Image (tube, rainbow, N blue to C red; front, side, top):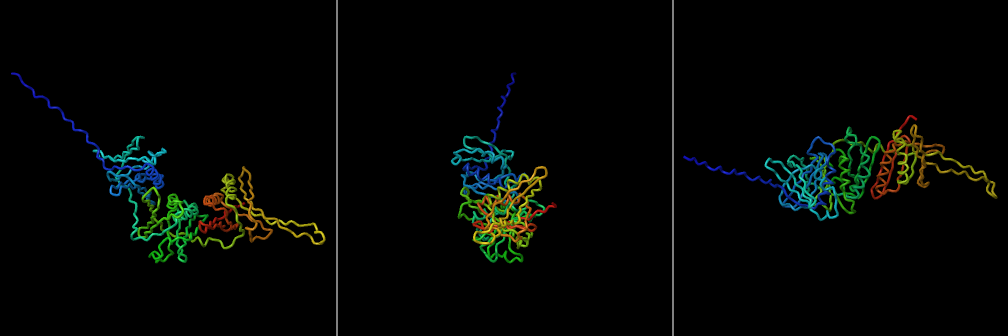
Length: 458
């Protein structure tokens, strides 16, 4: 009897499931590159929280926009650009990895578009695929947007804005931010003190300080920082804000320098938050949010001297060049430079005038202003600083000389900031042992920079 074997049924292999596309969009390559370069300003250089090195992407299909967020927990930046969104979604990716794909620039980038598409595999891994035309594609591991710290929003409907001229504010920050302390042991000195003037509502004061210097700028023709009728004025202390100077430096970089452009700001005291809405042509929205700092800023007005031994106006560029030429030598002697004024020298006339028996009147030669630096084993450098006689005055007696010692880096910082703002002259009101004031007034506002003198045993 022959046994018939059943044929073996063919094995059926199910097709591999295609990844689930959960977000898909395209946007202009140049817009995305610019957005990522601005967001990079918010990314901390060192952090123990890996998510802070990420950028959060949120695609909105209804509005056809892509919003990108970055934060370091002290300041947050959120910007929105136009996009063609096929599928809405959100995720985070390392900013460095995404921005690295767009470093190479090409002439036709303005017309090119980048395609971003998220694919989620069966094991729930999230991948962002990026395609840049014919240049190629890349895949970047992504994370859930729920892991990213939320950036506070601005409730423009209930919060009255303060309006500032963008170019004026940009210049004001440039003239003050560099003087703030960087030592975190005294957090209040790492801030910028902003105070509206209650007597003059169109004035705004910006002040920064460290242990040895103060920068104070008064802006005029501005609306008060905090709305005049705001309940904030009911506080027992004078109304003011303390913002991290790192926030102010970031704001300076973001502010457009187009004349006539205005920036809107919002202060929410209950949340200790300040927000700025910055108009930039590439983006439909750019929002900077920052926390405020609690603390008591030093009473800088008490430090301002009332009298001065020497008062002279000096050219900024010439003075900066002179100090820079002394920096290398001064660095070997604790950054010490000596600014000296010689005693008055008399020239006695001996010859008699014809027809007269009188001797020629005695004349005084102009005092000489010099800058001196020295270092052991490297010698000494002396430079003469020219000045206009009509701008010079002194309370010193003729036989008295004068010397004040400054940290060379402090003067270079000040003069560099003034030169960048195209300020030509600086009024120097000097004291040998008391604080000295450097003053300027113009379209940038009324500016006073106080520098404490250094003291040595020799």
